[in-house]
Image (cartoon, rainbow, N blue to C red; front, top):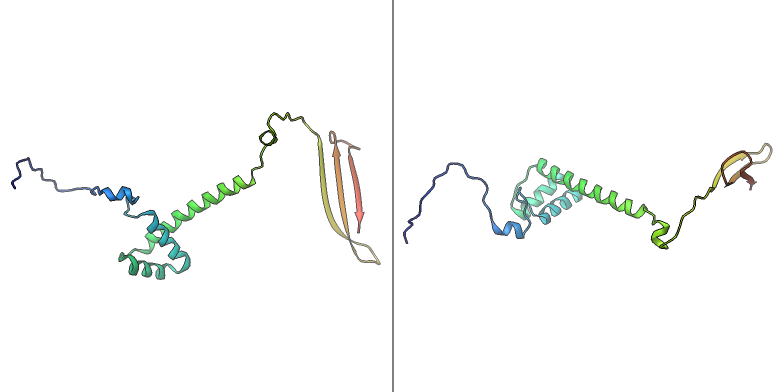
Length: 151
């Protein structure tokens, strides 16, 4: 078989394209997500040195500690973002309109406050004091009922 087309000679070439890279989701550094996860998992259970030694035995690839450190930092930041988002979702309370559609909200000036402290009564002992306040209407003199209970 003979080649009849033009031949182009180049001195510098970039990284080649391999069809399996997309299918295996291999990034530009040559890592698949699963390989990166396993490396980070090894590092979280061992020291960097032990983890890289184990990784080299398993994969046949020697990695510098700085590369492994960068992977752990990247995964750690992803984990922190996911944890923050999860905490925000968990802490978010639904609005009344979401639970009961069509509900109209009116401004309500009510509230409650509770506090407690230990007080030493001379000749007796320490007593726990609890303060409960109910707020009705606009906060002004006389609008707060205070009750102090000693136990």
